[in-house]
Amino acid sequence: MDTVTYSNFRRNLKAYMQKVNDDSDSLIVTTKEPDNSVVVMNKDDYDAMQETMYILSNHKLMDRIREGDKQFANDKGKPHQLLDDEQ
Image (cartoon, rainbow, N blue to C red; front, side, top):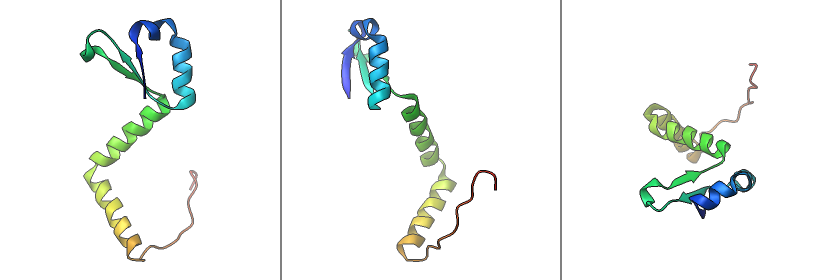
């Protein structure tokens, strides 16, 4: 993860936004006050992180995932045909 000062980020905003989107790597924007620093990230990465946090915080869903992992590890998994969005 790269770091850039606020003033440099502001001067080169378009280039930094393009770099974050192209590289899919977050960028730390620092200020004179460390508590005011921010992280700039690609929206797709942000959405994926939000989804992951939602799944991890959903205890019922995590229990189902763990149960499926356990079944798969014990060779009790069953292959099936995937459904498409319209089914």
